[in-house]
Image (cartoon, rainbow, N blue to C red; front, side):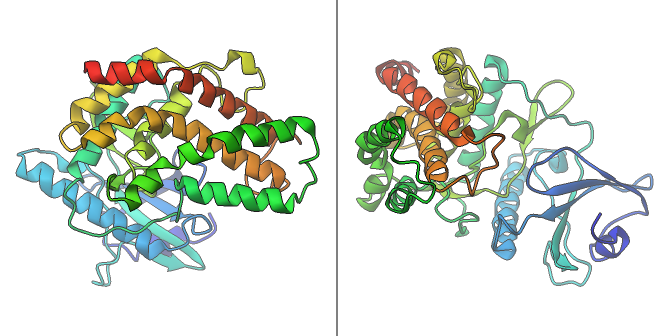
Length: 363
């Protein structure tokens, strides 16, 4: 580790005696460690927050504290027990400031209570997709009346108009000199022909017809904890929780889970839209989210499923035109393959728009 764990952990109001600190999981953004304590005290999770991605750590932690505090209060009022297994609990500093993070040697750290006998899964099948839909819909429902005002931990993260402007700038600059290729010109024309329609959410928001919600914004199956009986305990990885449209949770999950291949698979003929995953996730989501969704939000869920492969295609294409400066690539045309893959998925989903609308009406 890049800092002394004893020094870092001594700053937090921990219980028990620390016995060991070992790496935990394989997260791509934050460095995570399990802190084992003496018998009778809880174990903890020590995490270094990646402030290169999350620039405003104070805002990030305020968001998380507001969300977990609100969910905990709601669960307690509903008579739920064993709350530390059903909502994350972050440990304050021992200096009485109330802060749940500190900076040591240039790095930002936080500590939460470790949830024992809990599991995550990477399985994407109809069963776990149904669990995911229900869990993320319930997460949004619990936060629908959150009194706190949250900030954007990654500004404009899921703002399609912003992504469209980034593409315009990339086209104007053509830094990598790739626009002269006929296939690149054809891709640009395809994307541009749909951009106006895909920016619908931002227009409706300005007209007061579409609300922003508190969303997770990183809806993956492995961002849920399950107990040993396969029941969902809680939603985890809350760094991206911020105001957004419900499509951020609904559409982003299906972008990856309902594609028959990985987002960078070069076999475009294999790209297809998995209806079994869509139906399972949608049933689960509406079973818990219907309590707060407006008719406009519910009717626009198919738009959300189209939006996210399109938005991701725009982001990959923008990076390709800029010379591959944002996404890590394994070979020179990696972002081009990603762009083609996500546009192929977008067209598959778009071809199923009427089917999706009818399925949602049937629930």
